Length: 114
Image (cartoon, rainbow, N blue to C red; front, side, top):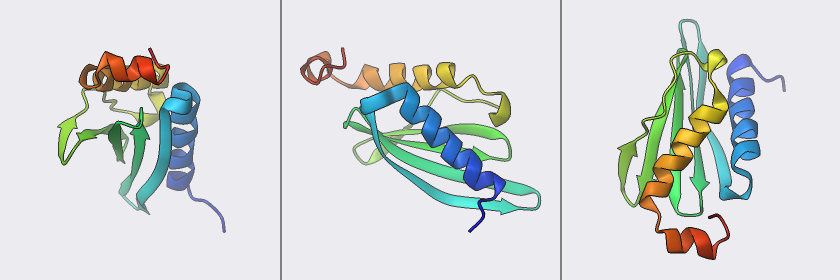
């Protein structure tokens, strides 16, 4: 089975996120990959700090997402207009900083992440 461009972009995103977050990120799931003329998208879900679920969406070049803490999402402030030009370190750092605001320091210290 040959992978198309969107599958490869989604896998590349997961690889970069895993490299950046290390053991803080787990359970990557690539969902809803669509590569149709004029419309390209994917959604990736993963767990961060075993505390928050992250949903990242790519659509026609733009990338953004949500943090799920319980059953209600909080929009990520980390966004990029053009996926191929994303500064992934900055994008992931913004996600990390935002998620850490919601997690008690005591939890992060107990797990060795702070």
